[in-house]
Length: 579
Image (cartoon, rainbow, N blue to C red):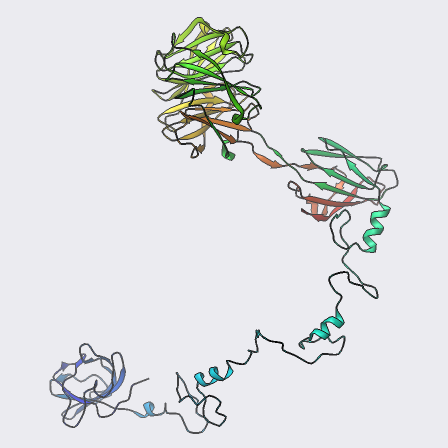
């Protein structure tokens, strides 16, 4: 829509067919700005220069006092005039500019028309502004979602009315039973709960009839559980492991029975580094071991041993609660390895506790000791047996043995490898020889510190101070490093204040322990899964879809029916996942 103003007429010295620079007003007229044209307004212009003329629309730019040209008609065959610098420009109008005026009768206004706001309370035919309307309805409640105050009233509908009419309190009370101790009349109904439901839900007569006519048997959890139809027709089973169900006494005359299975979460296996989580348990050992480097647990979790390279000692702790590091107790028992190794970095014990092996960075050797009383460091003595590792590496950081004592593995911190040895006589270092077998861990950590394996030798774990992570490897052939490969699985040790030096697991792999120079931290490493149920082959489920196993604590209720004397059973779920 163009802007219309009065008496706007100026001269211009613009030449050519382009944008016009507007000059001063002609005598008796105003400039475009004085007439009320503002920046970006579109006006209908007329240009006259001698006998030539041009009509069009243009956008006014205040900053340069210019006007663009879009020609609608002209004496130059409706093309723009090529001005010579003596033209006159004025604001005009054409017929279509005038038809936008509203008629007096039933005008159809557009845009945002305005009108004077009447005085509050005016009740005449005067046009109302939005301000007048809002001021007059403010005290009124809106039709949509009114927020009433005070004590509003409404007529009370006839008892039984079922429409959108507003209800009074009298109507509601006459048609409703109270929440507390309601006294129902007639024949009230409620949904029938699934048989076996044990909540405060109302029990219908159908539920009671089923409950009182069924014989319930609680099945004993086991890996294989038998459903005997001679004893009951409603069975409950609380899983505690993966379970296979069998059927017996199918000819006992029972053609329908129910089975309610409560789910359970079980361990899917330990040593699951990918599932590791911090237990928020840690203990310091710095009172004795100011620079703890190596760590070993007695297999039953009642003893802990720590190698300290600052004191050249191995310290012995009792765990009054097995595998609970917070119950560690130092009784002053220790062993000084300084006569052989002044930089002990790792240690290992024979499973019966009668042999101890200490590895160190000062001599780059492994030393063998005997304990006349198993697991008692106070009875340890040097066997005068050792093996130097310089021929294959240096800076040994940790040591591990195969459980039968025929293989030894040490972590080389200089070339960042795990090296493998064979002991032709089990647990006798004098018979150890290098297998020329190793795996490089340099790509995972350039400063490896700790080494351990899972119980069957199919997984190896390494901790490093450069990455501050524990890393996992798989051995496709147990205890053979030649078959080891990195699993691309690691765990960031973010909870410790120092980099990890040593790593150890509980024998079942459910707990991992990581030691720094001053403390030991505990992590859970079990892979938890939902216990499964294997149903008898005579069970036929809709579309062959066996119900999803109930997760720990939830409930699956099944109903089985037979029409052939128990040869086959059509089974469907009555309910699932009740917590």
